[in-house]
Length: 303
Ligand SMILES: Nc1ncnc2c1ncn2[C@@H]1O[C@H](COP(=O)(O)OP(=O)(O)O)[C@@H](O)[C@H]1O
Ligand SMILES: Cc1ncc(COP(=O)(O)O)c(CN)c1O
Image (cartoon, rainbow, N blue to C red; front, side, top):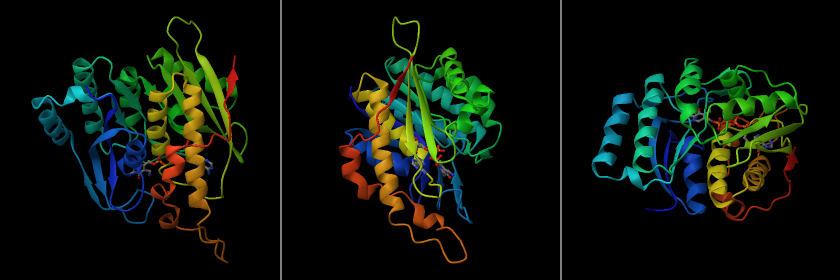
């Protein structure tokens, strides 16, 4: 069996970097073979004024996946990574994919990034919440929701740090071994605080840590959550302590965001912020920062 081979089911965009477009290169740079199934093929991400393209349906997923099974290729994966999905039926069908991969290789790691939205806004149908909560999360080994997604799934608002730990415990109660909330606003508008909780074999309490990041720039970037998931997958595979993986993930991410932010055109005289086309993550140009992240921000252990 290949040790590092990911089946990645996410979006494809022709222009720009979200979904598989931003997961593949970093995973390859970090030594993974990446086999992609494109849940959608869109001209660009959903923030742009026009969004055109195709969404794969559940029977199309079943068909392409059945070919992998017929050729006995489905046992080759060390990891399954799922992110942006276009339709509820497709999302439900992923449960069959997880179960089939786990049957062929009980050690396969299912990394579920429950992509649903950000800052209070959905970019998928709201019925996704129930499907993730009841069908996908119970099969997942690692999850990486943002604050909005973590709140939707657990049904609990994150206002204080205690709320975040309760939410992470909710994921553990649903069978998840490593749960990370990639960013929260509990430390105010200028900072992002990530929360990580990891169940250890033969330990009754999870190992917990936080990581505080200063917010870079005054605009939001798209694809950062997808990039976070890909990097964290690679670094948890290479490090037995998930907080080390979090430090490396954030080190690469911050460098990529800085490389992107440094090249943004100035805010126009009328106060208009740079459009999405200028904010596409500079992933290819940041290869060194992916290969060899310089950890500038350490995680803090939380007892
Ligand atoms: N403005 C920013 N400044 C610094 N880091 C950022 C910024 N936006 C995103 N990030 C980084 O990207 C990661 C994922 O972002 P997040 O907003 O949590 O995900 P999503 O894109 O799914 O909403 C964060 O953990 C953080 O490291
Ligand atoms: C097609 C597509 N894929 C993935 C994403 C997820 O991006 P992010 O990592 O910022 O959550 C988006 C965000 N709108 C999207 O439009």
